[in-house]
Length: 186
Image (cartoon, rainbow, N blue to C red; front, top):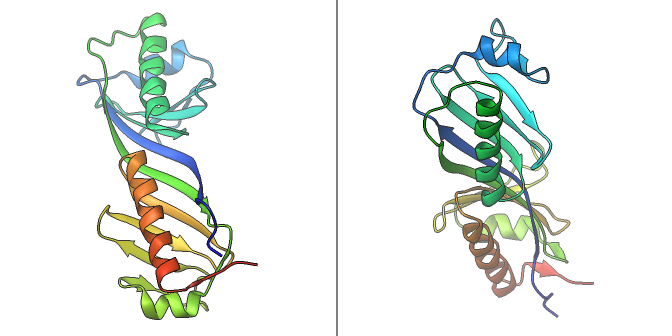
């Protein structure tokens, strides 16, 4: 008896951004009390905001990396918020940031168990070495994602650039697992 739809939860969206100008990270550190900047350890400054709850790395090149948001829209909003806060603090940012989604990580529950041994023999582009790692690593070509499958029926999907690609990957894989009779429902 096949389960309904997989339960998908977007856990983290990683976005890169660029404001196309040099940034004075020392000035940002002097202006904002909550930032972290340790140039001897790492060349970027960490700028955290509460809404949406994210951390944005800012580099002297004007490039940024935003992590922690739960959607592509929230990642874009977070970068926009950081730029607005910089401007309000007197840091001159001339252009709006160009934002590109780099990676979406999602956790999924299929609602049943997976025959991992059989899946490893059946699914193309899969790697399963249980003595190294308890999950099967499946590389999907279209959309280009990597899905970790666990016998519990839980999955982790990574590498998607659009949220729709997460759903497409998961639904394609779920249909394949069903078709090959690799799912066990209690």
